[in-house]
Amino acid sequence: MRRNATKINEFKQFLGRQEFAKWCDQLLAQALYNIRPERHGDLSRWQAAVDNLPALSTDYKIYDGSRISIGEVSEILPADKQQLKKSLMELHPWRKGPYELFGLHVDSEWRSDWKWDRLAAHLPDMNGQNVLDVGCGNGYHCWRMLGCGANYVLGIDPSVKFLIQHQAINQYARETRFDFLPLASEHLPEDLAYFDTVFSMGVIYHRRTPQNHLVELRNAMVTGGTLILETLIVDEAANGLLMPASRYAQMSNVWFIPTVSKLTEELTKAKFINIRCVDINETSMNEQRSTDWMKFYSLKNHLNATNPAITIEGYPRPKRAILIANGA
Image 1: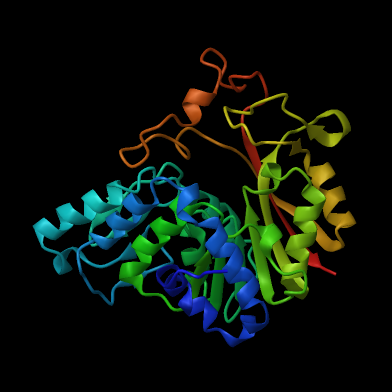
Image 2: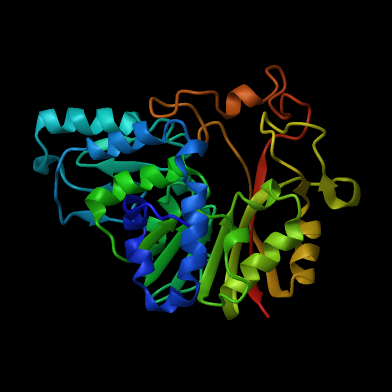
């Protein structure tokens, strides 16, 4: 395989980690395949936006607040702040956040901090842990994991837009404890068995075979490791699964939505133990909404206009649960 030196350079931090040396060639090949230019017509424009970010440096980094904050207002000139906003806007839409860079508030579609707040009290002690975030988006929750004391965080997500957004943030954070690879969980080695805690938030219902996803997550963790699984749920459904006929809340890739009891059953089959549901929450239009940084339709546009208790398609409106389990 002919390797593009520039693209390899983007992953050099990960490639230098001896603990992953056994699988580096495999993971690098898949990452480069996923970001090949012919798959992404806007890739050159997105990369140009990152290249045009103003050259700034800072030691101010806050990972444990609602906003991931990097840089202070006093460290940027007005002209540079305008260029910063222009470049980041080239990476629209910003789905996950919020972030604040040198006083510039990136007000994302999702208040991802609200989900973290619901989860935080139930997390294991993450001090010194190695953590994997599967389907990490642009990495918002990965930063929060570092804020909880994680030793190392690997975020994976097949979306190239999310990868580029992460590169933009990390250009200023220069964080060596956080790597991002454009991969999905099915691309992980079956014998990885490295991470103390594994997160999968908002992923499983996008997988045609949920049992495969759960096994992939278990294979990634050490024996006795902790799984944090967050997902859409329904209160009741035939055989414990709502199977959308076509779309769900205008999403075309939602294959099923389980009840909590069905999901518990699937976790048990995948050899997880100590399974507990720690939170159930109906998604509000204040948590997921359109903003200047995400101008497309959002949750309110995907609910029935006269009955917001159901989606446009007539299904129950989005409700989400967080389950925690341990690998056997």
